[in-house]
Length: 418
Ligand code: SIN
Ligand code: CO
Image 1 (cartoon, rainbow, N blue to C red):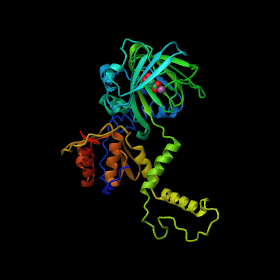
Image 2: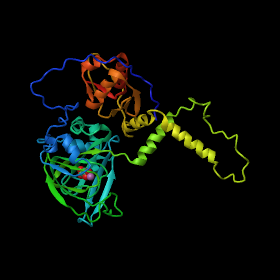
Image 3: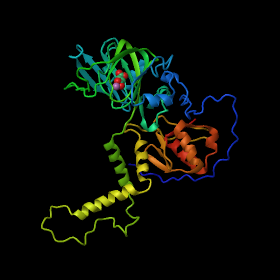
Image 4: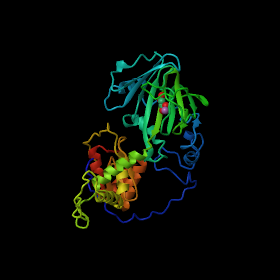
């Protein structure tokens, strides 16, 4: 894990309060800082007339929602040829899935990328699909599509996946453990969904395919239509007529053991052995140990020492919050940045699509590292995290410490001059 640079942003005096400008008609009481997101309390076309607030209350993690023409006139974020070219790249996660034979008896084949473009069957051959994960990291139009869903906390947002399928192509009936918005961007796909919490999986296949899937509802989605599914809903999507492109906005739900492991690892790294070395020695000492006839037994005092070490690590103020923020903002393994830019005077900044910027009350977390932030600098960084962009005026007003940090992030390729 990289060492955190202890950059501290100075607490600056609060900005003078400007006189609120009166507007004749207020569009919403709750505008979202990201201009791509509908006001949180107003009906939104994307969500079929529900406001983001109502959607989160009624559907999120609860029940499916089909929205006809959620994105009318939607354009695919990339062409078929551009998508097929991505399977050759080793910094792009891709999969080719082929189905042969009759439903129920069908044979499934999975190949993971990178692979040569010629490994993909002819577009006219039925029954295959290619899927590319993390399209938002590589294609600005995909990032723009993902931006519309920033009414969900960034820490929950995972990526935008795109699939292309020939006639009848799909990944078969399956569950996902996360929420997903399935957006049809070209052609048609038939989605069949059902609640099958204990459904068995078909043995011996390279994919997790439900055995004996029974659908409760089905719809054919046209370009612009969207289906939201909470975790655990079985679903099966088959391309109808070929040239079918679907974008999936997926979310991450960290597991309990994953969170415990990752935060404990970081807490252990941050434990400061020197701070109270006199009161509590940084190595185990046992001047009271008696001679033992059971040398294989772990001394109870050593167990207590380990327990005290763990409690101490957890009791450090803010330590868990810091470990959590660093973990949640960590880039995925295959992500790398393009360093080397400079931040010209008079410019705004925009987060690189690969950057994850999060915050809590005391710190900001970017790409696995953390900084303490207070006062106006903290508010500016929080605004950058929420809207992923800062205008030139805000950047010009940054304290010298914050300007230095932004310049560093631009040089590292985390932030782009805008
Ligand atoms: C697909 O696009 O074919 C699959 C998406 C999903 O089921 O999550
Ligand atoms: Co799925």
